[in-house]
Amino acid sequence: MGHEWDFAFLLGQRDFILRGILGTFGLAITCVLAGMALGLVFAAARLSRFAALRLLGTCYVEFFRNIPVLVQILWCYFAIPIITGAQPGPFAAAATAVSLYAGAYMTEIFRSGIQSVEKGQWEAARAIGFGYLAQMRYVVLPQAMRSITPPLTNQVMEVVKTTAIASTIAYGEVLYSAKVLSDQEFRPIESYTAVGVFFIVVLALVSAASSLLERRLRRHG
Amino acid sequence: MDEVLRVENLHKRFGLLHVLRGIDLSVHKGETIVILGASGSGKSTLLRCLNFLEMPSEGRITIEGRLVGRETGTPGVMSYGTRELNALRARVGMVFQQFNLFPHMTVEGNVMIGPMKLRGMTEETARTLAHDNLRRVGILEKAREYPARLSGGQQQRVAIARALAMEPTMMLFDEATSALDPELVGEVLLSMRRLSEEGMTMLVVTHELGFAYNVADRVIFLEGGMVHEEGTPQEVLQNPKQERTREFLRSHTLFRLPDPAPEAAGHS
Image 1 (cartoon, chains in turn red, brown):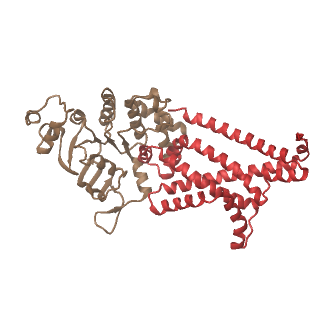
Image 2 (cartoon, rainbow over the protein chains, first blue to last red):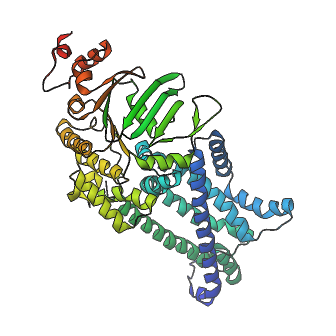
Image 3 (cartoon, chains in turn cyan, blue):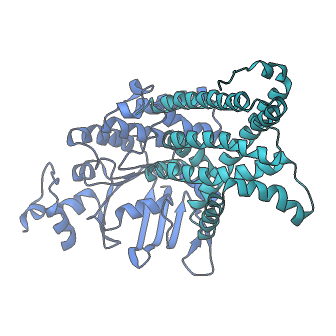
């Protein structure tokens, strides 16, 4: 009952596999960047001196953090067209759902990171004449990055893995390619093993990049 | 004499707490004013209102002849625009008790960032300006270090240079030496004294009565959010008219005058 491992067939499907890899990268990069942007904006809202903005930030986090991401993807893909009459493509649906989901977590990461910066730093920046955005950009965020980097790395890795769920709405990413090949060639073991190896390699690189960044940020105690 | 700062009937309330209860103050170019008072007398709050780190609840502040803010319907209450305040803070230097240097920037980076981002200076021009100001407070040799490698006294001098680089019309010192080890206080006070002698307009909240005596043109004693006594250092420190001022000076362990007057030491 030994299985004869044979990855050779994968070589014959290079183009198809490459398309899947690009699909994963495209979706992951989009969701990471959009999630960070959403996270920054809503973290600022949650820390605002205006109660209405704080409430908006809290609602956003509690809403999108508490719905399973698969449900959000399915909702974007199957419910939106019925409500709006416009059918989003699988990429748009998956990117929207995963970005909003990731953004909710990143909001909390950015919020706690920004809060870890002493109040005196804001004041010193303000006293020089910096407005809010300049205080944030030149003084607070660079310091907050130190405490933000480790949890943000976790979240980025989480987002990269979450993109695999987009295969359920037939978005052409790595897992979708594997599924198709596995069915064609009757080789689920090799196909899904290859997917696993792919994610390990990509995420090990993400993690290494993050360690480098962390070391750079830590240089000046 | 040019009036740099005029404060009229300044009030500050934090909720029910009425911290400043009608301060009037006029400061002329080149003057050094020391503000004394027990903790809770409102001296830090007064300073923080002058560059709008705290918003005054009531009252008018005029800086270099320009009234800050706009009148609202309520008499005495002003409204302030964000842009106006940012521009104003760039012209009023502030030095904090806790230094608040930016730890992720070098010493010269701390001094350069304001001029570069707010006044559009090139890096090169800003560096020259930074070095000039670091030299003024005697710490040019640390320009490339990070703040964490510096002693408290050195950090505070960098903070002074950072404020000076914005070429402010006046400088505010909020207990600039209170967080320092005793042996480091001197170097910071010396930098402040030099600045005063160069003709900088300064408002200094401090517990260093020796500095007040030797450097101030005028001393203001705050009590309960009001100006309780005001005059030359000799008047206020050696011959205080008010009982509360005398009490404050007696209780002050750091009160070391070169030639203490009998009134200041006599009562008990």
